[in-house]
Amino acid sequence: MRLSDWPSLRLVIPLSAGIIISDTIGNTWAEVPVWCALSVAALLITFIIISGDRRPSLSGLFLSLCFILAGAMLHGLQMRKVRVEWPDRYRIYHGTVTSYPVERERTYKVEVRLTDSLYANRNIYLYLPKDSAASSVEPGYAIEFDGKINKPSSEGVDFDYAAYLLSHGVSGTLRVQAKDWHVIPSDGCRDLAVRALRFRRGIIGKYREWGLEGDALAVVSAVSLGEKRALSDGLREVYSTSGVSHVLAVSGLHVGIMCWFLYLIFPSFLFCRRDWIRELIVMGILWSYAFVIGLPVSITRSLIMFSIVAVCRAINRESSALNSLGIAALILLAANPSALFDMSFQLSFSAVLFIVLLTPPLIELVRPKTWPVRYVWRVSALSLAAQTGTTPIVAYHFSGFSTYVLLANLFVVPIMFVVVALSMSLWVTGWIPVIRDFTVAALTWIIDRLTAMLTFVAGLPHARMELTLDYWWQGLTFYAVVILVYLWYMEKRTHRLVQALACIAAAGILGLLQNFVI
Image (tube, rainbow, N blue to C red; front, side, top):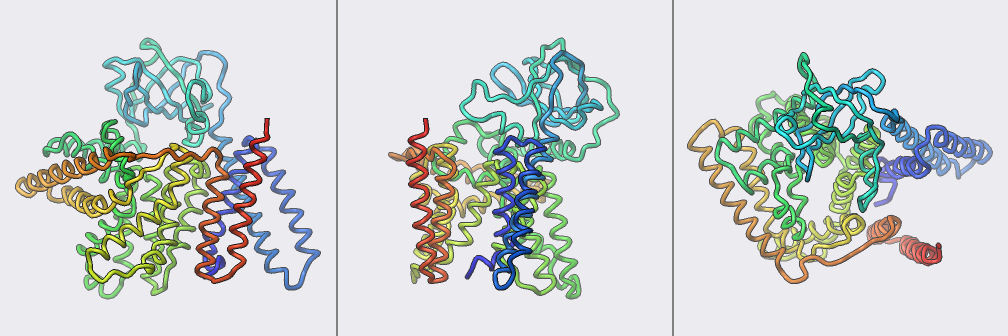
């Protein structure tokens, strides 16, 4: 196995580098293309002058620099749309509410898409005073408000909140008084995303009507619809401390279960050996579901990979998990370059990358003969691979590490499989009272037992350990060393170990220099 076997995955690196370059030098539209264009021009001159056996490597370098330029330009374009010079005076704005109110200590926060001709399609966070009018606002409402919108700021918080808002497409914030805003008549909202949000809220209302409540309602809403607002702080803390917060995200597990259900509903013999029709129907249903729940990164990544596998299966071609992962990353970054700085994007792709890379060799290390031991080892190997990929990111953002994550995953993975399957079956059986009541009772009992077990794990001594990465390059060094050691194991080439040692040495030197910076 060589790096050249993963062409799409290799292109993610220069594309990401271009995005980082654009972000680092201030996202100024003038500087980014000039800097990158000069680099490409220098490479072209070198490519023309030098020929012979070295041309293939230079063509690869040229392609990489083209992707650097593309990443920088895409990110610059996005930031050009998001960054706004707001008027330094009070004025009247019009907009459409695109989220349900989120309760804060003294206000309700809603996201608003402006409809003014000068600032159309810019998103802001509007903070409304706590009263009945604000609490009754719903997505799709047209509102008029008066104020002075401010640029995103990190003042008073412990992290770069301004960068977080800009990366999520939020151009400003505004706090208004009760007299400074009101709902205005409109002809209705035609925004499909808003309609999907209302549809999700309607399904959660059905869950309540069918008898789900408390932690059971919160977990079912999270794993079936991606709605985590009902999760209490205590429940979030339990899942976080035990290291299994990832099971609350709609991801590949959900796609796999839905594929299994859909393939049962649409067996291949119905299509007279025209498997591409079956794959098209299944993918259409899955993408519709993803759109309804808001296209979160984890399920979008999973669906792109599943779609590639489905196309390959339909045309009788083999597919590569790593190349599919690379294509998914390229598509998502091209559509939203700022997603690179989103922690959910980082965790999703790093976890899958290391699961695909490390799980097979880890499983091969030990071959138990009995199925209980074999199950424990397989789940442990998968969990260890995923934790290897996500630990640097978690340590950098949260300065912590869950000690008993391998223990928790032994029972969380199979139990959550049952929870997801029952949650999705509830959409079909919810209209049959007897089956619905049984399903709701089963979900409530299973989730209560799962919460009790996770609470026990979270309460064990030293369940969470301090693990801090002060600089982002420390995490990149860790990833580089792990991947180079993996390549050495697969290729049996000593120079991979030399490269890994060189990375460690470079990180050590950089760390020493960092300590001397005043």
